[in-house]
Image: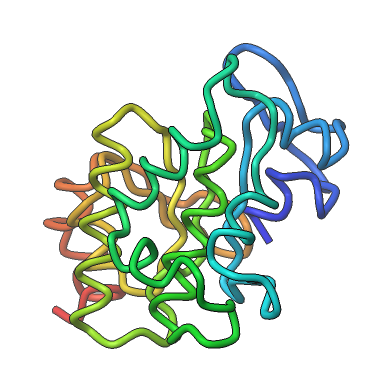
Length: 193
């Protein structure tokens, strides 16, 4: 619900959503997308009858300062080489992990200022989860802000700069990821220790 509220799909009961210095709480979703907020939902939502390349081209928003489409395709294929290998395959032919890569890559095609990732590890094999999280780190290292909602708190805190613990939609604890990972209460409640 938090991510859907940020992107404007759910209206907040209270509070504000601020992007930079601008209150964007009441802006419609399509305006927020143009302002650089992109949600990658947990259910992936790839176009099953379109190829990987077509899925990526369909997701391209003209907010890039004039960069060529090919430059963005090259960039996402560098981040996700498997997608480059499967560029001519339809979305329905991809494995769950490949669909997750495609969902993230589709969001990246708009070069958002803020990438909202909802449960990117959901339903993936452990080895692929590691690959996805390494790629998320690379994307962030290239300067993109990422808000990650993740069931695997251990992995999320391992790659995050900051962490937030929410209960019933309210932030009850926030700190650096390192501090949260070593907090005894957080360890007991969320990290199995």
